[in-house]
Image (cartoon, rainbow, N blue to C red):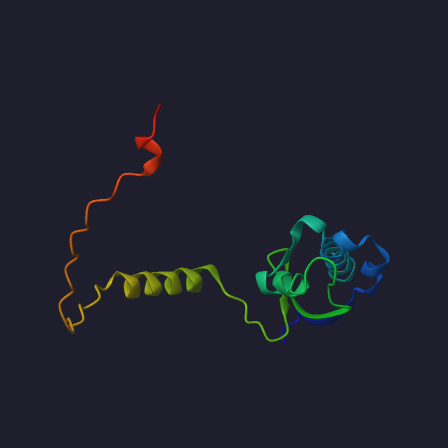
Length: 137
């Protein structure tokens, strides 16, 4: 670990004291305030990774986890929170991966040899007129 990297276990149990439908959102706010306090940063400079956010909302808004173990990195005045097993993805690497995915999708698919010809549809017999229209009067 570098000097500007720390590991924290953030207690989120107090989110369960709040309204059920707001618990996950409150847990996000709790993570932000915890990181502001411990990393001595402003709330506007705290970034939470997508996977951390997904973990907080994984069981729905009403049941966030009671604890959250994160790895916090400070770089250029910005505090970023990652899960313990998550690797930070830089913008350049993400762009390269996206380009590779696009190239794979652009390759035309080879046509599979036809096993047999499709049967042609038989012409349908003319429909009989309904009895409702005949009996006018």
